[in-house]
Length: 316
Image 1 (cartoon, rainbow, N blue to C red):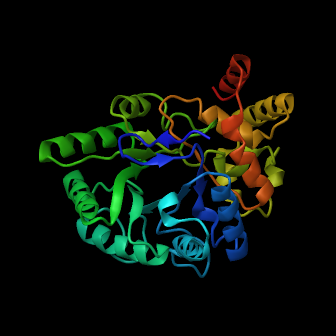
Image 2 (image 1 turned 45 degrees about the horizontal axis):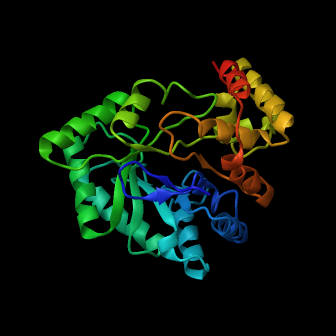
């Protein structure tokens, strides 16, 4: 398996990033540990989480996913230096515990380090743009954390082209390092949030790109064929957001291509993403071993020009 350089950060990751939002939510500790062991045992190394995961679950306060990863790191045979841990800051964690101000970033990173049971975070991301804080303040805080050795690299998530360009301009004017990685929402259904100006900036500036919602919250796995299939599903509201006649066309196209080469729709959806301009590695989650296996096969799948056209046209 070929490792991929994450932009100019100096980090090297495998072609798939494990989405850790499920840890402590739809995957309990035994399941989470097993999936992480399988993931790293197969030669993959990058795990994505955030301080806010999974605050949306009744009785949770955030930090559950990080804490799960931290416990796994302590008991796993996998060496810390062989894993790339990605986490984020900025989402609301309670009163005055949110945003991208320097004070909160410097406090929040210590909480993440404690829960992860590690002395450094490999990649620290601004989870959402914060219009109330100057870019210089946020970038200066990240630069200080890197100088202190608490993080190795930093990036941003959910920034549009204007926000990313503004941050880069602010960094140049202030003599600060800028974001080296972008985490956008991007998949066969949601294409306008990355394709175009944002993708051009990332390619021109050698910014690594690790898209989330790569499987549209599970819609692109082929498991759901109609709205009726969403009943009782943990992500029902999110699936409803993605569903449309266009989504139905995309799912059908994925199933047809998958059947043609004896693969799963999820595998095909990730393989398509890996062909897209500027993409380093897609993020995807799994809660069962068979789901994980279908994700990890994606780097070995080659899609023909005809298959790519079929998928492109379905999602146009």
